Length: 252
Image 1 (tube, helix red, strand yellow):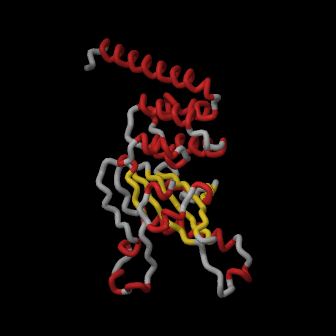
Image 2 (cartoon, one colour):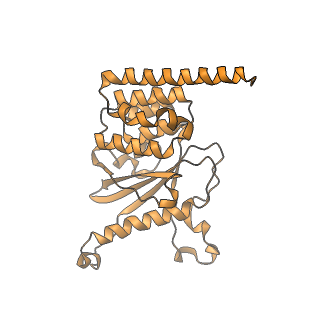
Image 3 (cartoon, helix red, strand yellow):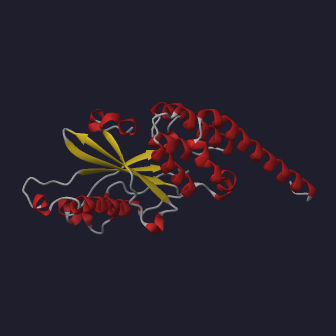
C-alpha cells in the first residue's frame, strides 16, 4: 500500500507481508472531527519502521499540520520508550524506530502548507541542522483513479475511495464494492472504517446512511446488494419528496 502512494527508494522494501496495522489513534481530542489517522508498522532490513498517515477531512488548507505531525510523532516515540526497558533505552545501540509522516488531502484548494517542519520555526535559517526537521509525504486523494484504488483492496485504499469527492449514489456504490470485494479486510478493520465514516461524514449523508454503514460493511455478501438498494431507494424517495415540497411552495 505505502509503496503505491509515494515514490521513495524504500518503497521496494515494503510489501503487504511485512506491514502490520496498528489499532490505535494518536489524534488530539480537539481535532477528532477534522482528521483521523492510520498507523502501520513495517520491517525494513530487520528494523522497525512506522508509517503515520494523517487523513485530513477539512475542505480548507490547515497550516498547523506540520506542528500536529510533530506532536503525533513525539507521542509515538514516547510510547516506544515507555514500552522499552530503561536499561535498553540507555544502551549505546538503542535507536528509535523511523517514523515516515504522510498526509492525505481531499480538499479543492491548492496545498500550500509547508512540507518541511523547520519552515514553521522562527529564524530557522540561523540554526541550520541544530533544530529539528522532517518532511512529510503529501497524497492528493482525488488524483487517484477508482480502479487503481480498487485493485489494492486494503484499509487505506478503502478509506481513500470513500474520502474522494463523489456524490451520494457513487458513495453507496463504493461501499457495496468494498463490502463485496475487499476480502482481506478483517472485522476489526471494517469497524475502524465504520468509526472513521461516523467521524467524517457530513450531516446530510450521515442522516441518510450513518446508522447503516456498519451493517453494510459486515453483512453477508448476498445481503449487501439488498441493503444498498434499499438505501438508494430511500434517498431517491427523500429527494422526490423534497422536490415536490419545494414545488408546492413555489421554490425552484
